[in-house]
Length: 244
Image (cartoon, rainbow, N blue to C red):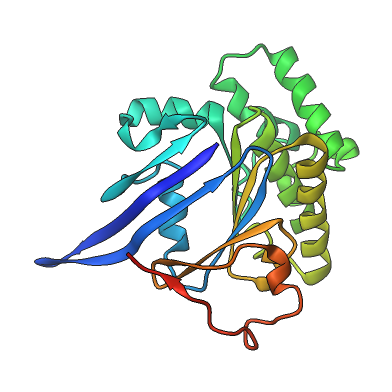
């Protein structure tokens, strides 16, 4: 469903270039919940931007729902993202002057759906994420965890092929972090939603079904989330880098 094939990327640096990703190759099946784990500087943010079609790779290809997004024009990508990709952000990225319901409805406005249909879908999703009584409130009236639930509902409103969650618990306390991950797991298991969760936290990554780990721009071997279940970042044994 999501395929990253021999992906490499570099940024211009004066007369030379800086390599940030090298030979990344993996596949995420429909209905999986996968963690993209890496520390600062590992290349995970660059990889996320490439998978979301926000940048073009130097080499390799990215397929989502069988389509090569690296070959699309900017206009094609914009349309594709609206219908096939959902985003959950660390800082929620809600529009403060819109109500909770209006924030969730917004992606459907660009699809031209009637207001009644938008409202019904938004309220249904907000109920699903535990915010049934808060649909007409404004983001500033909600806690951080509640705002992230709004962001999750918004990411699902277009029924995307994949949802990318960029450090979705980064602004939350430990208790709220666990609640948000519980919600993502429930949505994955009961609705078959495909999630790719970008994180630097081992505690978050080990709750997913599979871990894709980056180090210094390379994929490292390993995969099952259980492999990290009893290990902290400080105690983890070095993993083998997969280099060309």
